[in-house]
Image (cartoon, rainbow, N blue to C red; front, side, top):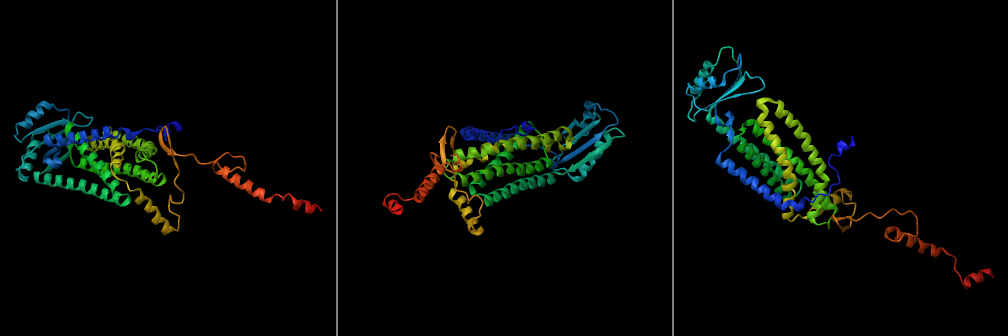
Length: 381
């Protein structure tokens, strides 16, 4: 059982900051590639955003897809997409892209024409009619939802930490959203309202990872005030690596199950979450934290928070009652020096706090000895 829990050792010493420049270059390439794909071939918008007709139906028997497509094309309704859905070969999804100037009456007439082509006894599982105007409004609403959520998260980080952390979190969130959109554009995955919900979920999940690491960074800044920033960030990342990786793996297991068994309706949502979790885990380690190296983290401001808390609580501020441990330079960078051993009463301790106390004890014992010389002889008389 312990072997399963300690899948990732808690005392790793990976030099993440050594690879920060190649990682940031890779992130820039990914973002630029995603933006290029979005500009050239755009997103594959679903009915929610593009408008049109969507029909999911179960046929009485397995249909001849070529014959059914030919019959639908004779209606002259526009581009017709016909695909199997689910495990049952009788389940089909029909999508008809309508022109931008299509009226509601024309859409209803087109739906009736499609139903007239299909065989009798068809079980209609889902029928949607979305006008182009409604689709445009939904696109605008989706953009506002994602943008406002990122803004709210950035303001929280700024309030909770420092402005440098807020910028790092904002860059990481934008990186995650843009790269995920780029994956959808390159793979031509359908982008609909469920995908927008997945992006909002992804933003919350990604910032949760980032806040955990940032909190550890702040803790180390307070504790090791003389440690170089690069070594301190490495230390914080290694101390939270086990939690970050295990959380991502367990969440991915649930998302993959949703992707495999959730059906066509949840497929886009699950795909967006799966890609986003992988990208978000990468950005937490190689975007949100390394970017702090390029900002002047105000250690005195973070220490000032402790001073204010100490004044308010009478010296009981968290982290302020223990002096910063002295740092020594070793093979793995700057590390805290070992704590002195407790005093065991041995006056022969060679050095450290025990030796100092032993010297004091010897001096005190010397003062308690009986005086020698004339006073002693006089006493004997």
